[in-house]
Image 1 (cartoon, rainbow, N blue to C red):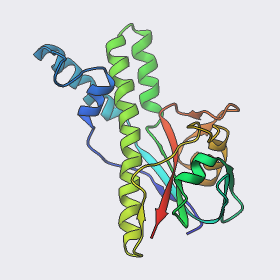
Image 2 (image 1 turned 30 degrees about the vertical axis):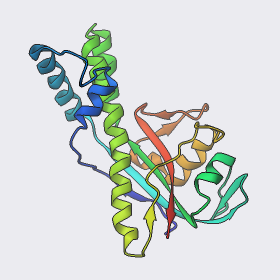
Image 3 (image 1 turned 90 degrees about the vertical axis):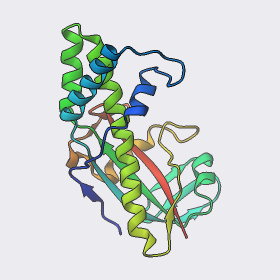
Image 4 (image 1 turned 90 degrees about the horizontal axis):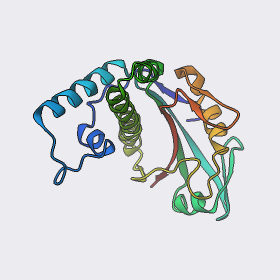
Length: 206
C-alpha cells in the first residue's frame, strides 16, 4: 500500500473522562457540583457538534534501520535514534494523521472574544481529546486490516517533536499523507493548522 487512505468522517463518542482529566478534574479528589457538571457536559456536547474528525494513514515498508536513522520505501528518511529504537522490531510502519476541523477552532476564538473562557477551555479540551481519540480509532481500523496478514500495530505511536525526532519531520509526514485533502495546512515552523490536527508514526510488526 503506497497511497494514503482518507477517512472523511470519523464518528466516535467523546472520551468524557479524559476531557475532564485534561480540564484538571481528578475523579477521587475533585468535588464538582451538579450545576457545574451540567454546564461542563453541555459545553462538551456543543464542542462535539462542531468537531468534524477526519484522518488519513499510509503504510510504508522499512528499507533500512541502522539505529540512527530509518529509510522507508519511496525514499522517506528520518534521522532519529529514538524512532529507530521504537521501530527496531518492525519491517513496516504507518504514518497517521487526524484533524478536528476548522469550525471548533473558530468557536474557541469566538467564545474567548466574548469573555466566555469556561466554554473556550472546555471546547479546547474536547477538541484535543477527540483528535487524539481519532488517532486511536485509525489505529484500531488499521489493526483490523493487517490482522488478516498476521500483523499487528505497536500499541503506542511516536510523533514529530518528541525526543530526538525533530518537529521539522512533520512536514514530510504531512506531505506523504497529503493532509491538504482533509483541510489541513502546515506553517513554515512545521505547525499544523487547524491547531487541533496531529500526526504520528506507528510500527507494524509480524
